[in-house]
Length: 382
Ligand SMILES: *Cc1c(COP(=O)(O)O)cnc(C)c1O
Image (cartoon, rainbow, N blue to C red; front, side, top):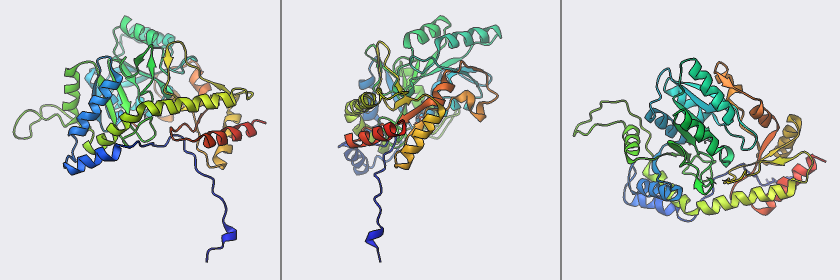
């Protein structure tokens, strides 16, 4: 028999960045069932792509795919990256920014960050390009990331890319709803990509989109992502393709999520404002401010502490109270798998990784949740 005196209160779990559904996702999914469009094409895929294109603007075409990783893979291939090529890539990121370079038999060259946005250091990008040119090897592409939603140094990076005539793959996985000088992230690169993984600002449970500037590029992406089937009544193939298209069921979730994207960005930015107000007075804690012209969706609110030890103590305190937080991304040039990879490091991302912590940042957080998190952090620093 249940002994009521033995019951302990289980503290409500606070997740780092959980999914947050709106009102219409299920209706779109139901429509897919009702019309039997349970396929990797259909009206929801088209509807989701149109919604993305209208939101991102700036002459952008969207192709919905099974993941953001697939979008980078296809995008690099469409830019002509192949065996033996070199691709510059931001080191301070999630592994999925880099891995697709290796799928194509090319080699990543990892580039460290600057302190204003935590993204690609323009100086190191240019140094890497001139170095590689001196070796007789021109990089085939630059993968630039808007980490945690903060736009990278758009003007500087794109000026360098233009100067050396190298295309940019813009990893906007964490930056849907972010912008620079009023232009949306995802639309700056020759190829852009979004992710709708479960922890992102909007989600289809899993999924992504490749963004591009020309209808012809989109047509190629659709062709390659649906097994590169030639135009014939039988199954005929002249090229290697992939099974990368998004399902019409999941695109239904995406259509519903696009209707609430504005609210999700506002909620995440409010989280950031709340934390900053509560914690910026606390000794040894700092935040990443928006540089001039930058508008961040604040996908995750990150704090910097004064040391690795403080960061770990805070993370463990939160964990004890059933609250999920996470160290900043461990830079790729420090990952065992990329040990042998050429890198241009300046110590910035290593320092951010050691001292930085991502706080719970979901758009469904309540004020009480945010207060609970702040109280535990304050107590830990007393
Ligand atoms: C999530 C993420 C990806 C990968 O997207 P998936 O949809 O999970 O494949 C790539 N780059 C960054 C920076 C991400 O945060």
